[in-house]
Amino acid sequence: MALPKKQAYYGGEVNSMGIMDMIQSLAGQTGAAAGTDQAKVAGGFIEALTQHPEGIQGVLDAFKNNGMAEHVNSWSAGQAATATPEQVQQGLGGTGLIEKTAEKAGVSPQVVQMALATVLPMVIQHFAPNGQATPTSSMGSMAQQLLNKFHSA
Image (cartoon, rainbow, N blue to C red):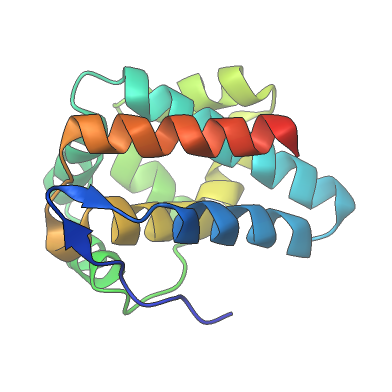
């Protein structure tokens, strides 16, 4: 699955429909049971991320602090489409985001790691192009739109 090109920024806002459509489409492509879990995890992760004190910048910092700066740079540039569950665990270990996402999505932490292996690189590419987090207000707006899309699906 090819990732769409990065969206253009206008006054700090980004066209967020591309990422929402892509995540929803991805969730639907992975099979009925897996798709449901992946959609739950994507929504739970975005919800947990909006409540995380440092938001997407905290995720970037956690990956960099855990020796994974090269992976973050690759994902933010759109050069790698997926991660492994082990990379998700290594990068997010200690942040509490895997556990919070599992709680919000109603799935196990292992399911979260497997789903985020696909979802996280897309989230980083779109919310943190070139390794820089978008403004929190913009991210919150996009996250709310994404959650609304999942709840109405």
